[in-house]
Length: 111
Length: 121
Image (tube, rainbow over all chains, first blue to last red):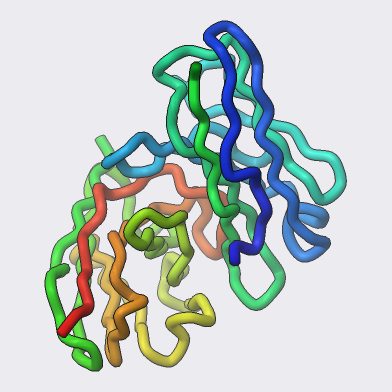
């Protein structure tokens, strides 16, 4: 069982917006702003798309945005495109028993 | 260009040992913390271990504590993971990942392509 809780799957049509939630505790998301999101296409290494809750690395589309409220972080993808179909993972620094915690991953299907 | 290239994986029997390596290039290796992250077949990402920039601090997931040892050689721009007492549940693709910070965890800004470790008799 993963330390952070994500929905197993979400779907949306091209052009629509979707939001993936990531729920943690007061030992991780609720206390720190070290939340990051990763996109993983099949057979590929994960790719950083959001860091420190709201920031995007250079080269990542502004269609990806992050936010946080209390112990839950969210990733919103607007203007869905076929290429967005992938697995998405949230991660956070933790002051618990492990330094780094991940969510179980969310499979995004673009209908 | 940042490159992280893992090596040393393969098929190993339960209870045996294996050492993974990660060769880094394209950045000042000894400025950053480094991590190992694994992904079991059809499963999600699982953090395994980290080492700070100067090896002064290390950390492990509970699932590998006491069996795995992380180390780094800044002169060789290399990261290592010594795995002992391997179990079937250690079967996974192991990724080397660069941290944005030097001492702890902020986020992984670069990942290797991964190396497969299969534990089976």
